[in-house]
Length: 178
Image (cartoon, rainbow, N blue to C red; front, side, top):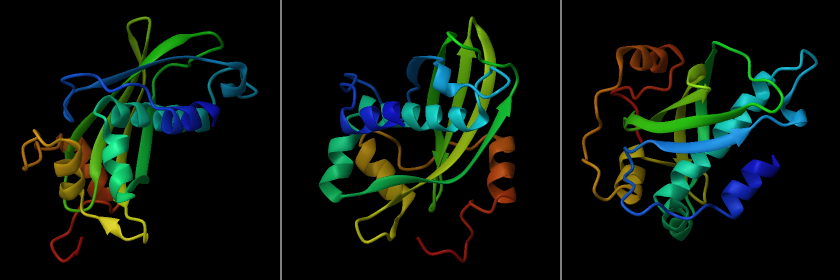
């Protein structure tokens, strides 16, 4: 939680020229508090690390100032993680976070954990943004604010991500209202 608080309240500096669809890289190291009793990173710690990396994505495009002006804030609507290898104490690793696309309801983000050139885990997140009154902000409005140079039409989602979004019931449905 300390990393997430730091990443949100004292965000890193924006990266000049960074676009909303460009990957954001977060470098981290496994600490003792990240481990479970089997001495590898606890599955819940992966989710917190993903939170930090998404905060870095927002910071990289100077999104905190834009969101703050409107008092919009991100929340997770759904997430899933596929684990391939175990991160252990002291491992240095990277999380590459990228926006895959969006619909009327949510933005879809992929987060890939790599260590020593190997993929250790891959997560998908469906994220929403809420306004100060707790009302959902349409994802295209967030994209327009955060990435003024981003095309107004979402890139096509990979088939497996689109299937996951439908399966967990976060994908936009025609009868939905933003």
